[in-house]
Amino acid sequence: MTASHLDHPAAPPKVVAGLGCRRGCAQDELLTLLTHSLAQHELTVDNLVGLASIAHKLDEPGLRELAMHVNLQLTFFTPEALTLHQPEKAGSPLIRSITGSPAVAEPCALALASRLGKAARLLGDKTRTANATCALATFDREPAA
Image (cartoon, rainbow, N blue to C red; front, side, top):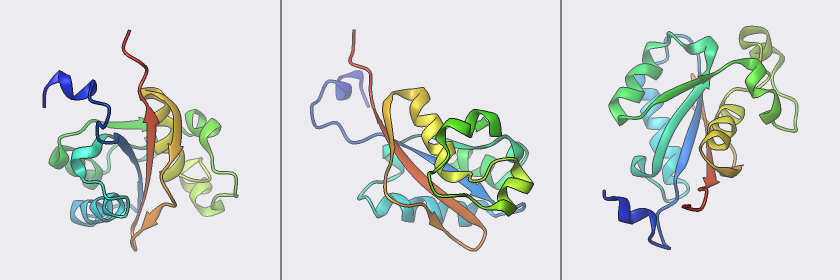
């Protein structure tokens, strides 16, 4: 990819993924969930510009392996940093008791998208497997100065 692809009006959408998972969730399960989530929006891993999760998952091997596998930075957010990005409907009391945040996937995706650009918004609903959740968010790039 060259820098010129940024100037192209039909540049492919850039998205970030917010991921939540149970302890010990395998990288394979996370990757399958991620590619399935992207495919629902006719996107691929090539559209991804970042991954995010909650600070509680800092040492989660499956998340770290996934980030290495797709060659993307994994950003962690504290529950306090996610406060602005919580979904309108109430999150899970169980998730809040474990992580300090009522939801993980959606607010992590929105927090990272907000950091990278403006007008961050979720792409559809989060998807889930038995052990993981994934939410996608997109954003508008700042116009080149």
